[in-house]
Image 1 (cartoon, rainbow, N blue to C red):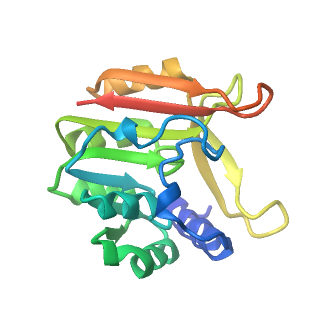
Image 2: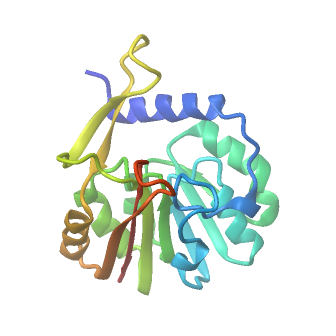
Length: 216
C-alpha cells in the first residue's frame, strides 16, 4: 500500500504545477469558494503572529505579512513552498516545507492565530491535529478554518483519488464532520467558545462552506 505522506506530496505537487491563476494578496481571505462571499480577515482577530496550515502558494500569508503581521505558512508540497518563497518572501513572509503534524510536534514556537483556508485541517485527522494546534497557540489565541460543507450522512475520513480515476492510485483523505461534530472535537481538544457553522452558498442549491472559529 502506498505511503499516505508520499501520496500527499505527489498530490499537492501535481496540483501546484497545474495552477495557472495569478496569485493576488488583495483578494486573500475569502474563506468560501465563492468570490466576494462570506466573512473575511476579521475572523482572525488582530494577531501579531499567525501560522497557516496548508498554505499552498502562500497568498494569505503574504497578505498578512504585507500588513505587518509576523506571518508564516507550512505546506507538505515542495512545489507549493517554492512558489510561495519566490513570490512572497519580499513581504517578510516565511514558509516551511513539512507535514503539519511533524512541524507542530517539533516546533517550540507559538502564534496568536493558526488558520487553514481549505487547507490542512481538512486533510488531517482532527484527533491528532487539534491538540497540537492548541498547544502552539498563545493564551487567548484562536484557530480559524474552512472547507467544503460535509456530504449529508458522511462522517470521519473520506477517501479520494487525485488526478481522476485513470492514473496511478494517488489517494488521500479528507475529514468530514458536521458543525456539531466539529464543536465536540474542538472542545475535547481543550478549545473554548467554539463556533462552527455552514456559510450558505450564494445560490440555495449550491455547496456551502463549513467555517470554524475556536479559542484557547
